[in-house]
Image (cartoon, rainbow, N blue to C red):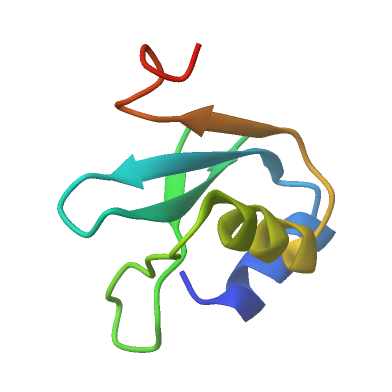
Length: 82
């Protein structure tokens, strides 16, 4: 889902949460928006390829560009971050 579609869902109050997922293959972060039914919508480019952000801060900033919603961070390395 491209950013304009994400913004439209946010404007329709369909998005309840953003989930930031650490992608161990690219060592980056992907963003999935979750709607009221629990469906996940990854942020993609115009070709449908999921976007990957270099840092957690970049991914969080992208969520704030779309709108304001709770953010959940899902990292495979969360056990080492404590």
